[in-house]
Length: 347
Image (cartoon, rainbow, N blue to C red):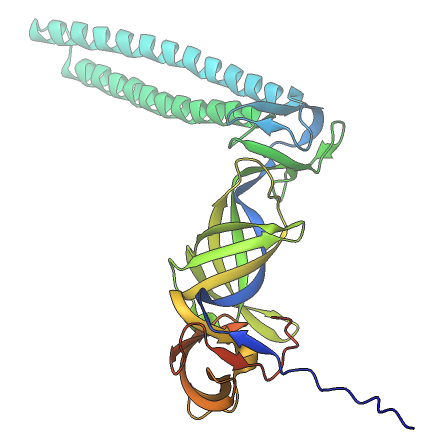
């Protein structure tokens, strides 16, 4: 006697129509940068004699961070100051000559009125006074020029002190104490300071999706180390320049997020989701329940009626989130639909 091993086929997978909140999004990858990052350098050349900070230190604006050997700058300032003092002394001598010429002219005029001096003597005294006054004017110009040189030397001496231009965290130190910096052609970078309290996310939007993105749209992202912890904000700026990555075109969408706890770090990878539309409390079914398309937003699918029989239905759909799709017409809450492909693991 033969025993049959045939078994009844399993029932087709189904899904109960329910109300959900759906979000239509654009997905992109991106990276994080501090909202403000400054390269700190020096316009003075010489040996970096001291550096009092290291990566990770927090500094405040105006804080003294290090110093370049000031000997050459101090000598240049002293030389300029000595030259200025010499000109000031010459000015005092010129002022005395102007005073003497003024008194001589007054005497010649008084004597001329008493017929005790010739007209030629008065003219000679006037000419001498004009010469002395011109020399005093020229001396004042030289003094002003030398004062500028002194101010420049003082500024150059100030450049030997490395001052924090902004408050923030030291990201890196590229020049160590004892090294010589040369600022002949460009300002050498000594360290980097960044404000990490707010981070800017550079989301790389694919060319096909950039027309869907607008300023002010809600956006969230997660990092690779904390995929369960989303950070949300709004699109702040769309950069017009394109960027090619492996022959694909992307556009940067920028948005800021607070980082008061310091969890976010520069160059972190961000998995970005830009929200385009959202509908709440709408009927939804899995995309795997859709059958053939009747039109752009109408589909034919199989549903189960109250008698347990499979029937054909044509539904009108709305937005989808990549897993579920909105049902605007054709189904009711609590009805069951057959899943054409349940590989998404929705059951």
